[in-house]
Amino acid sequence: MLSPQWLRSFATLAELGNFTRTAERLDLTQAAVSQHVKRLEDALGQLLVRHPRHVELTPAGHALLDYCRELATADQRLQLRLSGTDAEHGEISLISPGSIGLALYPLLLDLQAAHPGLSIRQRFAPTSEVIEAVLANRYELGLVTLKPDDPRLSVQPFVQEPLELVVPAGAAVESWEDLVRLGFIDHPDGEAMAGRLLSRCFPGSPGVRSLPCKGFTNQIGLILEPVARGLGFTVIPRFARKAFARADTIRVVEREPQVVDTLWLLHRAEWPLSGRAQRVLKCIEVLQNDKNY
Image 1 (cartoon, rainbow, N blue to C red):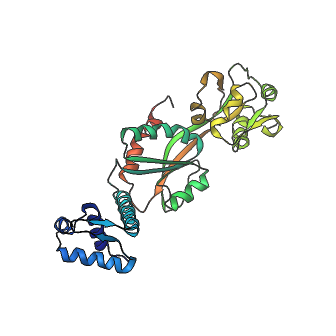
Image 2: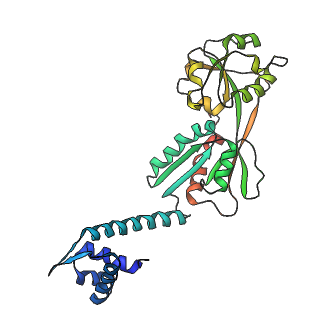
Image 3: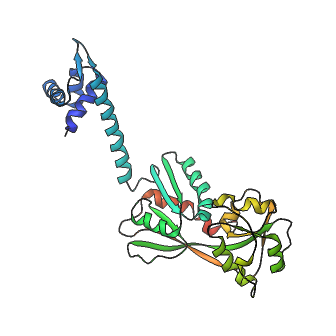
């Protein structure tokens, strides 16, 4: 194990190139600095070529200096992670379903642009993976569509999100037969979402499995592309529809009753949120308060 004090003496000597100035900066004797370098050379081989007025690093010395820099960087990262009160530096980690994730990501980027010391790490995932990732402390914040009951988690309602029946802009949908004519654009949660919404909006219908399937994609940002091109209809959560850039090419069919899901915010209950996470929650409150979302 290399002593941090030896490494500090070596790194300072490499910077200043002189034993006397190194000793003065570190408030040590020159003999102490020489002893630290000797201990390192006993362990690692020749690190310096000593000239009358300066020192020169050998290849091994350059390798050790790189190691010292890596340690300093790792120490800075550790200090940032441990400094929970610092709201303007460090990593923001959030894991959520794709629909709400599409709405959150631009807000998080706005936050990072305002505070360049922050780093955004966001992942889209189903509820089971979100819970596991937060419990394993791989992500500080998570959003899920089903409320977990694990006592290790702090859970609170975040926002409500309706399911929406989305059709091409020019399509007229008044009956089940109109949906049959259009055909269904499926996605990983498509059948379940469509089943929940369509069974209420079109009671007595044969069900979503009776509809012709006109396409499938597992990329949430692409689900509405075939709908926009007139190739079918789909059922998706509102935030996914709001994130679609070409709003004029699609239309939401408003029917009662609605199906509305509650999204739940969760984090570990045993320790407080970092200052960064608290700043994020303040930033994304707009999703709860702005009716445009």
